[in-house]
Length: 579
Image (cartoon, rainbow, N blue to C red; front, side, top):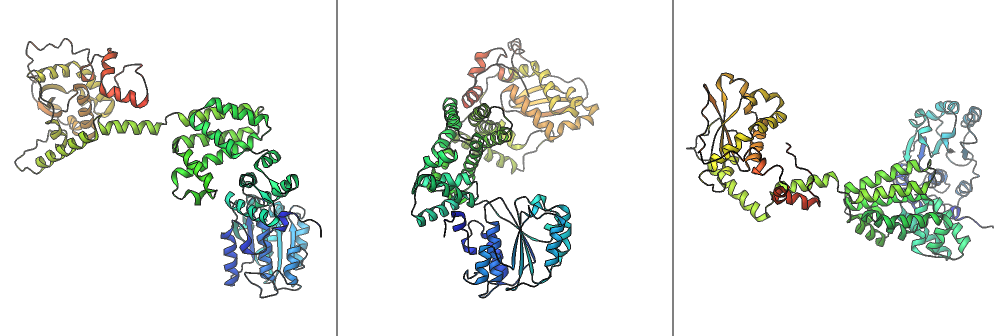
């Protein structure tokens, strides 16, 4: 007997031999065991993953002479041997590509009524069923829906979207998956051990990567390698024969992207191009690589999810720790877009290099989510140590509870902040005797700016805001007045959004914790008297915190500004007052 190719020699003979399709084989075995056999089955999936092999095993299970239908066909009876050889009279295999017209389907329909020669069933196995014409599909519809009891149909296709929905609705559909790399490596290891071939683990991993989930392609590639190298296969042999990129080179390329090392990135890309590597396949492998990095960030049992050798998984986990989800997602998006454009590119190397440089930048530039997290951290921490923040929160909470449970306290309805804020306001630092007057002068000088910003926050309340006037500052209490004759339209000032905005803006300008009070007046209000020795001359050129708006040095000394510049490694380029 002549040489038999590995893909044929190692074709599965039992359901247990099928690799990576347990969800299909288990369902079919249970259907046989429970006698729940459908009259039509549709197997869907890419090439080389076991569609035809499962169909033949299922046919043997139904027609086996030793106990059929059975989950485990004997493979020794004449029926099993004929089905395995493809010359059984009861299992008719049809190529949909060469038997796709109406007349051939009508001929098939006429033979359906004849009983099987030997077994209990006559089985029609149509491969690449999507190649049938629309007329052929329509000619098959009635027979497919109500076939004789001894007839079973098994269809296989790589393009289910081309199969008429009326055909699919009459079948039990099974979607076969691409076989994981780890399972392909295990089967290749079993093959080389049985055939006495010495193969490096990295060599088998490279073959499995190149197969893209198809075990038949991997077995055919291994067959070619054995013919090329003899009984010893190295990773270099695999890379030379199939133009793949080594695992080590991929790791270095990904490290260059994650670290933003453009020089090394360009050097590696140039070496791969000079070596004649398939750059489009390289893009596909990079997409898969970064997908694995994302898995490492979000899955606890990484080895089970990736089904890769442990040493490879360790490399993925280490590299994933150098980045985060936002950056990796940006890289995957760029690589996917480039993969779509690669087939139309005049210079694949130029496209690949520019895309990888963009990826290196995306992998190192801070994302918007990171910026917001740091800003929130600064805001929550209030630029104080954790101990200081914790102590302050405990103290304010205690003061708030004591005030809330004190029945003697009469809360005025004009207070615009909660008791918690009021308690916080009373913990302000001690002030000098003229502090209230100075604060009131500062409030008057910036009042027009306060009104301007409040209009932006509460557009519908601009009329009421224009009528407000600053009346006095007493400690941490700021009193604002409004005319009682317009009481109805002033009710909008008591809305939570308006109160919160007014409180925030005033606190920013006055740079102290404050409590806002609203008072109505019938006649022209009496504003707070300012002692003569308190000058308002220098107040008008100050913004928040009393700093001069044009003093860059003063802003640099502000602790809030320093914290932000240090967090983002930035510099002060402009000074503006925004809400």
